[in-house]
Image (cartoon, rainbow, N blue to C red; front, side, top):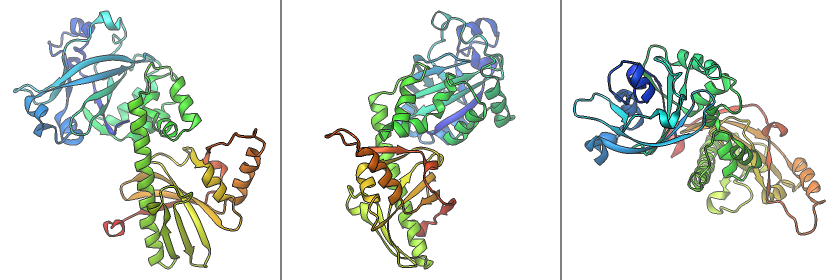
Amino acid sequence: MSGKIALKRLTRSDLTIFQHHLAFQHAGKQKSINLNADVFVKQLFPALPETEEGKAGYLGLDLLLLGPGLHGALRLQRKIIKGGSYKNWRLNGEIIPTAVTADRFDPLAQGDFVIFDFSGDIIPTSARLLFVAAAIAADAPLHALLENRLGPKRMVPFTAPELETLIDMAALPDDHPAQEFTLGGAIEDAALGGVEGTERLFRRRSGTMMTRETLQRARQNAETLGRDGEALIDAWLGQQKRAGLVREYTWISDANAVAPYDFTLVDAAGNEIRLDVKSTTGPFERPLHVSMAELLEMADEGRRYDLYRIYGLEEGTARLRIAGDLSGFATSLIRVFGDLPAGVTPDGVSIAPESLPFGDEIPISLSDDDEE
């Protein structure tokens, strides 16, 4: 997900974007979905009014419509406009004809929901829309949760983790299109070469596909995330040193990007430790990716090697769990690889975190001074 996400309760006027509802709702001829300015502009795209498109009150948008129910991807091109007399921007362009959608959107009613997932930094360039209808059994659990979340409001911003949590709580079937919004972990895993994430993305049934550009962007995001996690640990180790819990430490991979570990440190007891940082913005349970070079270094019994798992990473905050002294674990894997045919060497492995001896959770919160 892009992170520019919003939940909106549909009005009768919003529904007139569909030909069927335009004919039967008797709610005027708006033929568009209102995008409430207090959310769409003030919180998601605050710089939009100062852009050329914002001043013109017009921008094109590629849309991917999902739902209601188990309906998969429908691709359309529309526009977002703001007329001189409009208070809000509107998703507009032309009605969505019954000839294209058949009766797919007919079950939608006033009070149902649409979730927007916008792409674009300064202005929106594309969006996924998930429609959720109370009248469709497959949508009912999620509809109830969204009702509680929105309350009396018309439109609210969402964070990606918050939306993923609600979708998980709804216990929807695997082929429900809402599962598209829980693919952050799969995309992250696939970007790092993970089999589990790649399989999930390839086998999904909604009709959407992972483009080359999206995968490349995910790889770049994973690289940035890894760097951010290392920077966080660098600042945190500085805290530990000032507290007397660490004698000294060095950020090795900052100077040598191909090093098979990220830091060396000497703890308060004088133990020399090499450690590697594995970071995610998601939950602890997301797979870890360990390269063969890291495994070989980890297997060296003469030098301790720890894994630092950073998860829930946000600016200046995260949670940390540490798996210490993993030489035995690495040695057992390398022994298995020894049975491979000559000339075959794995590049790395994906590891479920629960298979490693991680310690208790350590919350990390850094001040501006710590991060300098």
